[in-house]
Length: 390
Image (cartoon, rainbow, N blue to C red; front, side, top):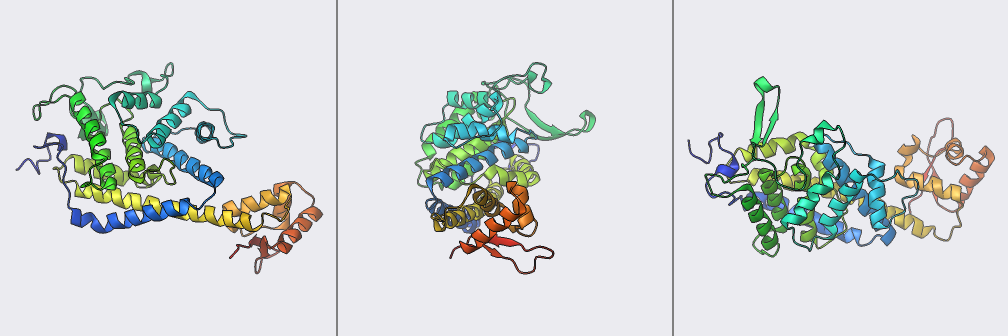
């Protein structure tokens, strides 16, 4: 059996590693669709206000952090992460949970990767990213007690396994830390080669920037240079490369959220690719499909933001009171479904804590100002929904 198909070999053991290749024609249609979606999203995002832009950026970054951790089976405090991000982005964080060292580190990592994408990713900067993931080793926390932070993993074999010890399955084994027989390079040598390629390839006109991000993700996660956190760093590097591709520090989409939705497929395609040869067309296709799904979801969210902005622009001079504004924001965010079929006087009263008579009067004023319209039917009580401007 040839080296190219021998499943006992890992991809990094192949001749000419890491000279990846792929079928450009097979990827052409999806790549074109992704590029068009990317351009359309950035175009729409440019039309929203600075305040809404900051909120959308925060939401996308929040999703990336929370979902990237979830992919690895780690839950983080969502409100604490939001607070850490809001503090750095200058967004109002009133009422949010206090930040922790963990969430502060996660925020620093992703913001450095995206907002400072013009700066080269050096080995020391990568080590700092790893330290952001593990800002402290909690006393008595066995899960972190053996994690070496801010430096390469030890000499022992790095394997991704599952199942009981007697019947465990080795899904992947990373290159050893010491020099390999194939290319005569240590793990540090290979990591430096990767970082040098990442910097040089940014200006490589022959390499599509989106495919570059896909290649960077696979290459780094295959090197698996740290004791823990390799997947999260690979996804941060992906965000870094995509920010470079877009020349855009603000993020309006969270690829980690789509990877989380397709978590099993993510691990399956990584395993099959890392057990294969240097043709990574299947990985590239999976990456493009997932990014396409991400961009489509982001467009839907931006469309909602734009509709909300247009609504408030149309009613800027309506002199709405605090209760009316609160209820309208709830309707704008959740739609009629958020009120289980539409707004009613009873729900207005419950949300704002005003009397029934006041709720009825406020609703009538909103109708007169064309903010809401009556829904057909409604059962035992009249229901209302947003009256979207043309």
